[in-house]
Length: 161
Image (cartoon, rainbow, N blue to C red; front, side, top):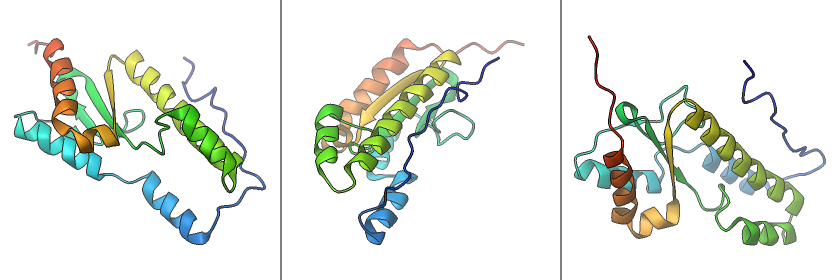
């Protein structure tokens, strides 16, 4: 069986450097952050409605932010910058900035990795929901409504025994 990682192509960052040490440190800190404001706001709203879930389940592709194991539903809270909201506009802006080719490649790779993770999860029977950080922070109820509506369509498998 062929692994979904075997066709991965990673952009080369050879010869490219961060704008500054502080920018590099900020980027490193943001890229692997869990319990972001977006996640906390959505989790709080889902919990208030009586939904129970697991967090950052290891072993699942992309390590989803919120996981409903019985329903096979995962939720990713995607940061607008890192995950490429308004991708064309974002890439155009990044291309004009300092180290433009580095940042364009970085965001493009994040978007491609998200798509790879979605495909891998879906192939394993998971339903994937992605929400944008700005949407969640501005209107958490709407994002929670979306998750709740999808959960309502998914019937957890019956226990056998």
